[in-house]
Image (cartoon, rainbow, N blue to C red; front, top):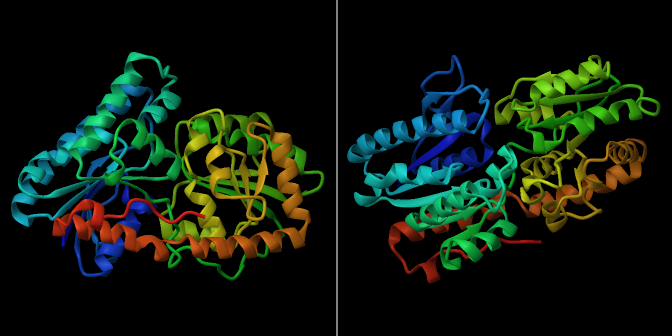
Length: 401
């Protein structure tokens, strides 16, 4: 098949997009990806057999929802023009559009008229995401407009993928027929996320977070917990890899607390590079705010840390309790730096507990890996192209616990 993926993200840092694209390329399909590029990055690349076209440069410095929207609209126009020209030449079988935003699927309108099937992949459920990011009321006009966009976008697509099972239930209840929607978690690719030999010998106890630095991630909890941990863990450090709206505030908080020698900020790294870095951590941290959109947004990093053999401390969010239990991760109360410190210290000082968790989590990650789930995605695409009746050919859900 010939497939084109459209994503308003940086390809090298988006494990979900990379996983699909490389799986298709490995089985012999032709895969083009149109994406964003970082300042100074090449406009074209061919990593692992995938043709990546970086249409628009982006720095994560949006100061409000209108700047954010304007940049998305520019990308939408560029993607629509690119797809129209290239589909006329390439005749894509599938256009796989990654949200956010949902309406990006309409960039493939001409391609659909010319015969391509459209898949809309919703990484984050948009109305709730924007409500959390910009302080919108769920009873307000803008939220209702976003719901309308969700409905028309999912109706326009031939099939819809959603990133977790809780959100599938919500989408099916308000926007999408059950027979055209599947939940596919952010399953780790264990050819990338696998246990490595520990080569770090610096005597530090390293807490690590890799990902976007947004307010709802509540990474300030991990920063504030460090003074509480120092007494029992004098060599503790926190390393944050990523960028986002909350970064400057976290840097200022670090300065105010006098933790410049314990909290370290690093630029985002490509997926394969960050997997190596994550494997050397002593403890992975996921500190999301359970009172926000993040309560139902599954963290991709938990299963990745599990696959690497690294213990994880996790906020007690609804979605994390849906998938995991105390045999796999150490939970702490959302927004409570003292309970975070308690959880981190427990893992750091109880070697038997840490070993038990790593063993259980590694087994769980192997059972819930991309290698075990990829056939659901491939069967769905093949079914769309074959035009087999959806209720017989296409998967309705993915394996759960």
